[in-house]
Image (cartoon, rainbow, N blue to C red; front, side):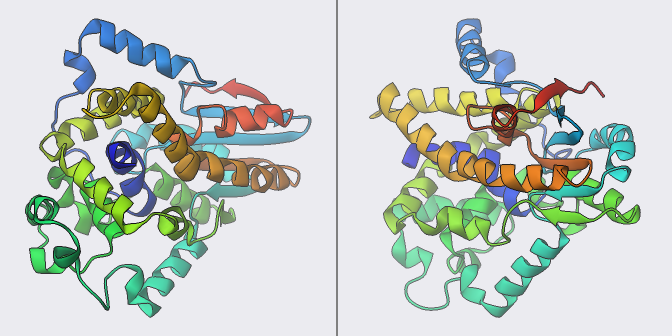
Amino acid sequence: MSRLLTCLSVLFLGALVCGAASAACVGQNLFSTMDPARRAEIAAAANAVPFPTGNFWRATRGDEVITIVGTYHFDDPRHAPTLTALTPKITSAKTVLVEAGPDEEKALMSLIAKTPSTMVITEGPTLNQLLPPEVWDPLSRAMSDRGIPAFMAAKFQPWYVLTLLSIPPCAMSAMTDKPKGLDGMVVDTAQAAGVPVRGLEPFDTLFTIFGDLTTDQLTEMLASTLAIEDMSEDYFTTLVDSYFAGESRQAWELMRFASYDQPGYTRAEVDAEFAQMEEIVASRRNRAWIPVLTDAAAKGPVFTAFGALHLSGEDGVLNLLQKEGFTLEELKL
């Protein structure tokens, strides 16, 4: 899965466990300078799946109502008017469901505190010993650019290094400001109104995602994402712009087409790996969320917020709900 780390890191990893202010990043939107034919090809690929656009939806089935918000997990001032429009829907819900609620976050922090090996290498060789020099040397420089000395980075678990690489250096300075993406703002609003907030999935889902990957696969993933390190700010900016345009699926397809251009891979091989990665980081989780959503909806109106990339696709949340008999309506805020 070496070609997929670009997609995985930019679109998922940072979103799962941390947030950062995007205002400090002023990269170039890669779509803005793209050849029109390639741009059209990417748009066509995105539009070929169910529900490729839109961040805000309502699903209804009889008396059951689920308000669905695809989120961008990083901090951005453009979230403010969105939250204002969504607040009445949050405060009138019987339950608010997010990827990781307050209880799940506490459980995750407790696990990390009790079991340091979840985040750092506590025994055996460290990364500078495990990785070949052609991977470790650029990795140590990338970590240094993010304010993390090489001796510290060497002790991090690979999944945590991948997470940090998903955040470009321009955004790292905001990490100490405890920023909140739209998900966190939804949780705060619900709690202030006394609306129960629950997680859609177990707190240790992050570790489950990486549990089946071998050391060789993780090494390949590190090497792949380091190959675009000099463009990390551009990819970050493109992701942000795509989200606020309601076109996050196109950011996913951008990464697929970038992988097509890499030597040594056929399109069929890239497509197979993308399908595998989508299954691991999104589809599998989406299917598990559906009974959680429908069970909650049977008891009253539900408001749910999760990463926008979970909305689209054959196994996207919207299509899965439609298969369950819900009618989907896009909300214009």
